[in-house]
Length: 372
Ligand SMILES: Nc1nc2c(ncn2[C@@H]2O[C@H](COP(=O)(O)OP(=O)(O)OP(=O)(O)O)[C@@H](O)[C@H]2O)c(=O)[nH]1
Ligand SMILES: [Mg+2]
Image 1 (tube, rainbow, N blue to C red):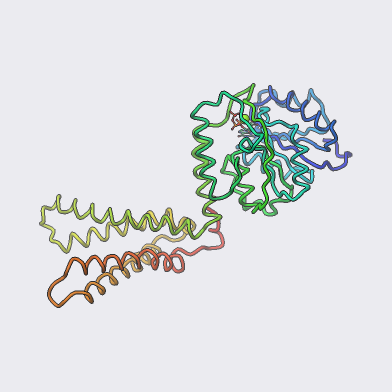
Image 2 (spheres, rainbow, N blue to C red):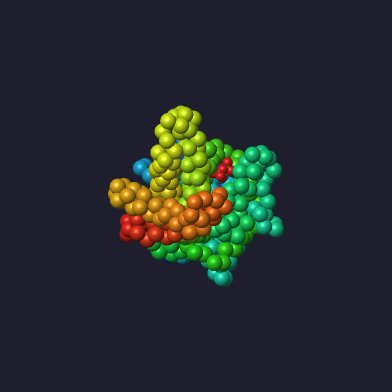
């Protein structure tokens, strides 16, 4: 890029992996947008494709196009983040290389950003937007399911879009970004705490050259990404819900263990011992899954104090259950109704009280555990 040129209004960031065939067409269309009066430069962030990308860019020889070849890092989101760091324009536009995204709407993106939008998405699902025919049913379902899963975080109709516009300074602290996700748009909207996301309708074309990089692995990463976003945006709920669910599963484990012990020992163990073994087994079950799913941020802290604390706190609802049942029953007859009320009270205490106590005293957030 020629450093003597004035800073452009917008840097178009194009992450690429083996898109040499598509680049000339893309750059021609971007050149036409420039000719239309948009001061843009282009930053191609290529993951060492070795498919002639470098030669294509050298041959086209446009001084407003810069190729950044990454030889160590890999991945779409991290390529985009790298592009944002290297961008020089006041605004960033991110788009695919494969001509799925029409560069001609970039002026509309800028108009929205200069207005009151803090983020712009090229959208297939707003009036005027469309998708080229020929998407298989599976891909369509896939896109819809992914969109529905993003609903708790944003009401944007097409949060899966990879055609994005935003201010270069949207994220001051790039450490908050988590490049695990393929869907960097969703990540930026949520962590940039964008309030006004504008959707510019686009016609999404099917790629003509090269291959899709959308693999099953990438889709599994999306699930992981959603979980991480939930933990970031709703930290208490994302801890309490798994805790409650593990609690319910623990009851199942308890009953299952009682049944297995009865079956295996044929009653030789004695009732008390069977109950104790089942309780301890269920506690270990809960501890393991709570530590993993509900208190994920404290997983790197020492195990033993957590285990002992967990067991101590767990015994509180058992005591509550015991005391309430005792209080409700007469001297010599333990009625099932009293037992049920006691167990119910113990469970309620168990879920809410245990969660609060464990969060505050046993699985504490440390400075370094704020991430996911
Ligand atoms: N730098 C970099 N770019 C990538 C990587 N994976 C994908 N890309 C680029 O990101 C853009 C989107 O990838 P695509 O494979 O087109 O994904 P898609 O649009 O969901 O799928 P298709 O519609 O089948 O093309 C393209 O420009 C890719 O070249 C990667 O690992 N590193
Ligand atoms: Mg594509």
